[in-house]
Image 1: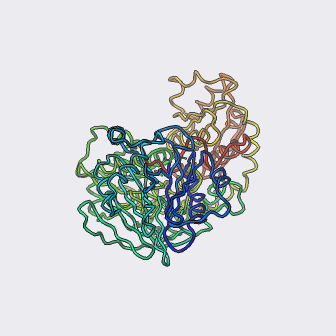
Image 2: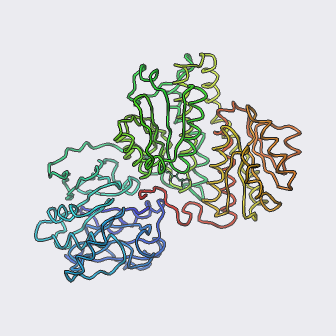
Image 3: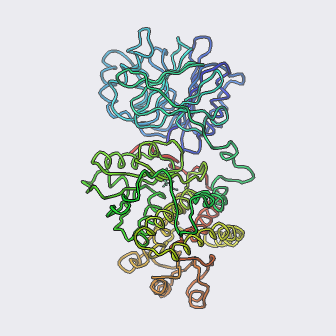
Length: 609
Ligand code: M6R
């Protein structure tokens, strides 16, 4: 999705903004632009395509301050130079970068056109610049406030005033906006990674707040124009965490980080109570009694976070004996969902900004429900607005395809399921076994990663296939869904995940020699049934690749290729079986020469519905 950044201070804004744009690249974009003030004149440079294309159009000695910049992910209007941001007003007095969608832009545009104002682009965002300019007499703040009163929709925006280079104004409704406080300079961005090289001191703008920045001061006001106090927080991420280091791609770096990130998710031991065979999680804002009173759980998320939520539901039902259901947040939000006093909801989101998940959470809260967040980004909107929650501490995830966040989300669900389970159903001995097993997982993943060349060979062998089926049962069913999502996201090869038990009810019609089936077959409840499903595919000449923890003759006979992961308890197996699937997707995409970290059409953080 779009990324925005603004800078005000004594330095030349251009290199700071360009560097910020590069840090925002991972969010996904199709064009970019920079707007600067130089000698009270507005200079705007914008270009379709990658930031490198924008850089080629910039004058060598580009300078100016303050400045704003944008990476655009098109919603209204084609991908081209004109529709890229910043958008300047008809009189060039105002320039705006905008992240979000203005729902009522059409009537406002119509009215402004009737007033003789002409538009250059097809975007909804240009309306904001012209509306502010229309209201701009001599007070920029008043002009922005008056314009915002007329806007409906979502926005994170930064406004630059050509004749007032001493300030930048930002406003938020639904799209993230963070202020970075530096030494006699301020930054404003949709994402902390854009400012990390310059400051770690930040505060967060909330919905319907406006912030006025000068190089050495800030003022935040709400819709009643009352000043809102802000607490400055320190970002814990380090700069090298948002850099590729020796890796070709962030995706591979992040896959390889999983032994450490999983360990961080269980607190390096700090969240585990091995003697009691349980875990302790601060931040849930629930007393012991509350856990006895919960009578059902709904977990929700989108994409990979939804598959982690499915596993979370499975674990909570199995270990804590609670009726659980995983929901896609985008569906839950618009259903007439049942919300009752003793229900507990979990909103799962790496970014903590996904609008579908955030909106579903707000809807549940509005109906009186209690929602806990499972987020990665500290200070993100879901983390702040939820009624409590757990951070997964996976560190910045830059590749659009989510990998390490998934295994950390699953780890946190394991901790929750063990903790609630121990209160309700699980004896200490079993709790201890789960905890002990969890601490062996990082080493086992490291062992899988040492064998990544084997997966690369498999990827070479199967990279010409045009369609794949991913199949699993029980706790491996969401893993199959996640494996298929990873492959389609980064390689653009068609892949579908199914419950293996469901194939004979329809999907088996897709099976032929050209469509390989990738099975996740883990010893446990449904292992034999899964082998039966493999037989069904084999009988129809389908090729089978199996990810398993059971190296036996029968499974080898049924499989064309096999990758054996280390032994583990079935409930913890997703933490191991997903890793070869992540690597498989990564290697196929690399072999096919795809843009692994920024796949086409995708955005890292989806802040529109
Ligand atoms: O930031 P979130 O976890 O809320 O993001 C949810 C999905 O948009 C995300 O998982 C998406 O499916 C990824 N591209 C998957 O790799």
